[in-house]
Image (cartoon, helix red, strand yellow):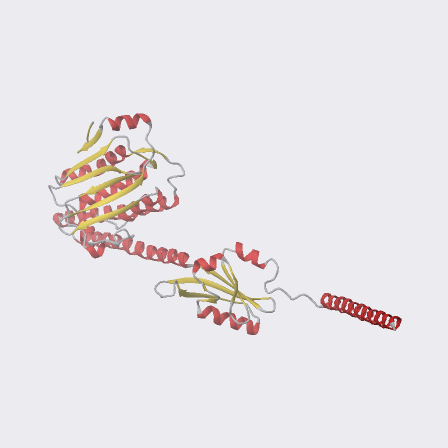
Length: 402
C-alpha cells in the first residue's frame, strides 16, 4: 500500500511538470510569434515630415502647418509673434478657407490680404499669403507681413504728390507774374511790384528745392557711419548765427545758453541744420520785438536742447501732425514766410538717426517750445573738471562769454 501511494504521487508530480513545460513552450512560441508580427507591421508615418519642423524655425515668413481638421500641427515662432495662431487654430477665417480649398484640389494659391492685428480688431496687417499642400495630409500656410512695405509705398506716393503740388504753385505764380510784367511794361511801378513778387516766389522755390535736396541727402546718409565728437555749444552758436540776420531785421532777441563740455556723437552739419530749422521757425512765427531762447541742459545720459519762442503757438489738434512732411499749421503764413513744410520733418529725421527724438509743447497765443533730445557722450576728465568749476557757455546775439 505504501509503495502504491508513492507511485501515485510520483505520477502526479510528473504530470504537473509536463503541463508546466507545455505551457512554457506555448508561451514562448506565442511571444516569438507576436514579436515576428510586430516586426512585420510597418511603422506609422510621422505626421510632420522629417526636417520640416527645423525648416519652419528658420523661415523669415510666418509658417503654419494644418492637419485635415484645420488644427495647427506646427507653427513657427514668427507666426506666434504675428498673432496668426491662437491655441490650435488659425485666427483668420480667410486663411482657413484658403487651406480648405488647397486641400480639396491640391493647387497652390497666393493672394494679398488684410487681416486683423489682434482679436479685438482695430488695425489690420497687410500680408502676402501662399498656401500649398505638404504631403498627403498637411497644408502649409506661409504669411509674409507687408504692412511696413505698404506704409512706405504710401508715404512715397504722398511725397511725390505733395512735391508735385508744391513745385507747381511757385512755378505757376512765376509764369503768371512774368506775363503781368510783360503786359505792364509801360508802368514802372507795376513792373517793380510784380518783380518783387517774382523774387519772393523764386526764393520760395529755391527753399523748397534745397529742402528736398537736404531731405534726400539725409535719408541716404547715416550720420553715425562717420560720426565725430560734436560740442553742443558749437551747434547752438552756428544755429543762432543762421537766423541772426532775419531776427535783427525784426528786432527779435536771440539768446542761447549751454553748460560747457556737453558732447554728442554725430554729424555737426546735420545737427546744426536740425537746430537751425527749429530756431528759424521760432523766428518766423514770432511777433516783432520778442525773444527766442535756446537752452541746453543735461538730463541723465541725455542732452535736451529746447527752443522757446513767444509766438502764435500751435493748435492742439495740429500738434500730432506737425512733424509730417509738407504739413503746415497755417498755409497762408507759410506762403508769407516762405515755409515749405519740410523743416520739422527734417528735424525729426536728424534726431532719429542720431539716436534721439524731438517733442513739442505749445499753447495758442502763448508760444511754443521744441525740445531736441540726444544721447550724450562720456566727458573727458578735463571737461568734467571744467563743469565742476561751474563753467557755463552763454550765447546772446552772437557773443560768447564763459
